Image (cartoon, rainbow, N blue to C red):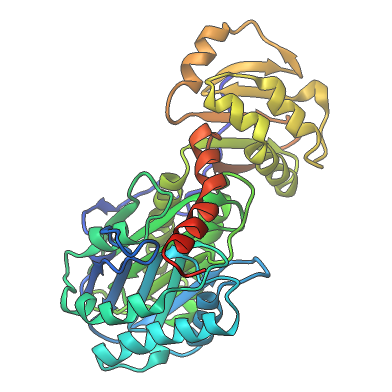
Length: 421
């Protein structure tokens, strides 16, 4: 029996989108740039400050971390996003500006002020994001002097540099854009993202910036964004942690030739589909492996999918290309979902590994071929109903442990060597 299928596409399989280059500057009227500030290390030359600007007024919405410990930049953005017409996003890597007290708020404001003065806009029209080490003061004195350079470098081909500037533990760039044909023209949606560690619903240690030249009102943008986030970034997990800085921002400047998108119209469906497509592709770039579950209720399906996807034993098996379905069914058992052991089927890439809670005769060598691939799907059928849920996850490698066990102490040692402590 093949693994069951569940369609998460709001367009029901129709994808009238053309994938294009350009990322966050694919849409008309958006420019981006990046500069080097030496935020994490004054002697480093890597790009670590990104700037994204709309040349005209925007309708903007954002979703932030659910972690009760929130970075200064998140707190400030939550205030600014209440106002209309966001014009710019400034984002740094190397320092999260989290758990930095009142000074962290002052530093986040200093970044927005520097951008506002250079662009001739108000501070409230600038959103600020940070990513990196938690608990260390932001070296804002290295950042604000470079804002003028970032503004001078703004370009409609600047997406790739901006993307590289927000990367921290990422090993691969994350960018995606589409052009969407409509009855009366076309519009574009594109974005960039960062995220590799601390990835867990809801959202992750991640930043995502998306721009569109579609004309759309605040309410419809909010409805579309909430749907797309729930079906993409809220369906990914790597290590079970949720960050202090998680942010997804969507800016719409209305510069396309498509009339204003209104609720319950074909254009509204297309926009929602396209936004979901961009977010989902970016989410998949953050993690590669998939967990799909079929259960009696959506709540049970989600419990099982997320529990298996966060299991460190399962992740270790994936890293070693070990099709150990025993670890998967073990996680299903403690997920809290309603299950019957004798009904559970587990598939690796379509190969039946477990039938009715028991091992099958599928050759282990064949299943090993599946889990050796950089991307594969695990399907868990509880055989209790038709509800389904998908989570995107990853393995857990030695490199991940090494990186995350040494980053903070290395930064402290570097700071002491410079005479700052």
